[in-house]
Length: 77
Image 1 (cartoon, rainbow, N blue to C red):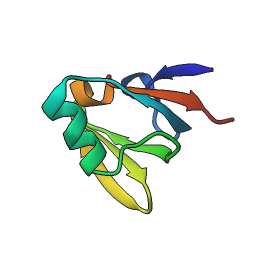
Image 2: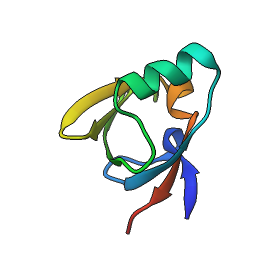
Image 3: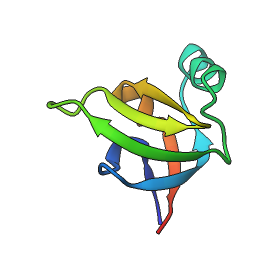
Image 4: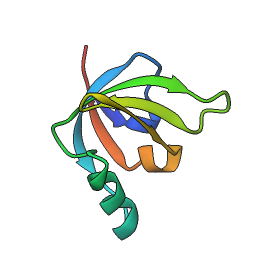
């Protein structure tokens, strides 16, 4: 099943399939290691849902919900 990273629930895992976005946003995501094929775990959500904390490539990364919406994921069971 495919969905956006911004729609994940806490504890959900997946593999990045695609990264969308315009220029600077896309470049920033790639620079932080958010690239196709990387495994992601959603660890925490802020009380209002923005930002969210993920584990990717062995480290914790905090993303804005708008940035997470640019990441298409394949959900792992």
